[in-house]
Image (cartoon, rainbow, N blue to C red; front, side, top):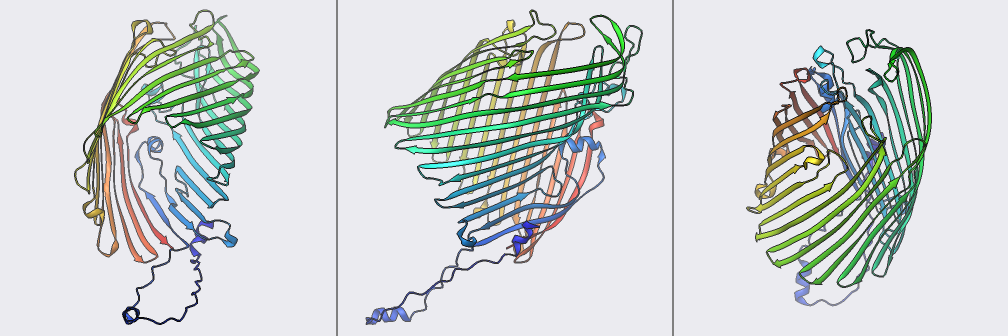
Length: 639
């Protein structure tokens, strides 16, 4: 209601006072000029104004999988605030110089947001950002070992909502000494499906989720001569509660007897309670030490504290793989605490020994470990990088450099590790080269390449020996016609001692934008992209400890095109859409055409109509197919 009430505000007009005139004798030429009609005064800039789009959305019945539709689109029916933007340039008692508000998606859409920005010159700036996001993921084919038996239950499903609010206040913005304060709240709640894991079987059960984090911060931005310093002190508190429960008999994923007996879950109550807090300090600085030398750096230190309480009570028929004994109930209660000092920092020096040469030397490090009741986790990573940029001519700039990354880590060992500890290290050398070519004023080409070789990696799925290439080109054919081309290519091949992990990823895209006569009547935008992905990786089967190979391939084509046409009577027709088709290990097809018409019926009211069609299909998983028609009708109110 408050947003709508703003539309009733009328512009505030400044009362102008005419300066007193002095009598003086005019020359004939000047007298003739004064007898000519005076030009009309320029229209005064409005002191307030904006618009709001209000509409109602209808959906036809979703043909096919409603869970898949909600996982991909998730647009429901009902009244909506499609968009809102309002500006106030003058405030009572001069409380602000300008206040901007904007919003969209309110009324039930999965991504609603609201922003406010108020400022008064040399006094303050207040910013508010609020987002309300619904996350639903229940694709029937994912995390579903029972799919072949006709059970369409995703065992890692989510139906949650996240709310994010960030408020910041900066005093004396733009001054040499500027304090600031901030508060952020991030919370989520909802339900889902997870698995209760017991020896010999897994049981999908309902899961309730609830978490929230409060972050308070304050600091100062200080300009001292040719240097700039930012100091910040903050703290946060968080808690995460999860409840996994069922009172129904659940046979689990194992459909065969274990040692002649059928395992099952009858009742379960499992709770996780995680509470914690952290105090952190941050410093950022920059200094122009000389006309040819700039220095920048940052440092962050935090020490989170976490307390965990776990309770589990379950009844049914279970087994203990260590003793091969059966039991009809289990009860566990664990309490743990952890402290995790964490420090990270970086420093960069930019040297300019010549007006056409820039040299950047940087160093980054990130280190943390935990002091836990049971487990020990250590992570250290550092990176040193040198880049050189040379302006060879007015039409050519060259870049080259070297990056060295190293680190180590350790954690509690997995079920198959020896010694009970997983330890690893990282050592990688990366060479970079690139350039910018300006062949003519309207054509620019960017090219970059990275070639890396690793002697140690921390994770099996990490890139080790890889090559990455990227090319971008932009050509302004005319003042109204623009072409762009992007190409990226990534190849990774791990050495035999790391285990096989081969990855090839390539993407090429071309885009066109045409605005004839500056886009006054017609605007056209189109894009085509082709992508390909190939991966081969070896893994260990937990049940048999045998080595298996996973191969995945995907070839995708994406086409999108949109046009805006200005019709008679200031009406606007917008149409176009996007289409995606892929082939390979998991072929998919998704189409989304749309058309929209905006027609003014009054200088303050425009009619809006929109139609969309959504269609999704997968040849290998026809259970996930859906299609639906969507209509929207509404008005735009302009003030």
